[in-house]
Length: 143
Image (cartoon, rainbow, N blue to C red; front, side):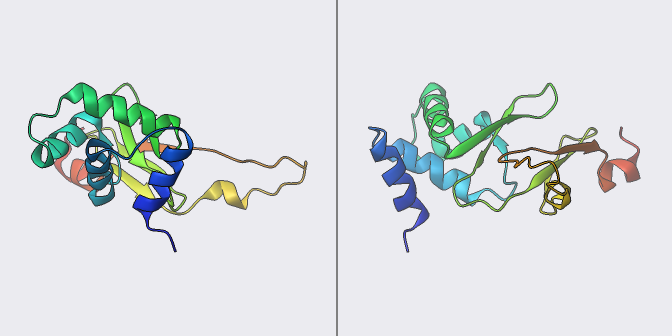
């Protein structure tokens, strides 16, 4: 069975890209994320710990390559910055976004999958974002 790194390296190679040390560091950061989704700035800060002196533009350009090749998904939640998440071998999920603190939580139940396909329509992709307030913000009334 191929590792995630091998799978991504093969996908990049088919499109004429190499898995450079910068791209590898970005992928390691994305794999290690506890939050599952994060900003380019956060990824840059973590990559900078691995590769001192790397430029933000290098990280950003490589994220664009990953998005183009279907390795990473770029999402806008509301009017905030773009968020990135690794999508190769991902488990299908949706997001709940706190309007108070901005925390993003994954939910793995998908109500869309329960919709009958009576009219012959076959969905191939969808996204569900639920906006509200997390427990901490409700408790603090910080919204």
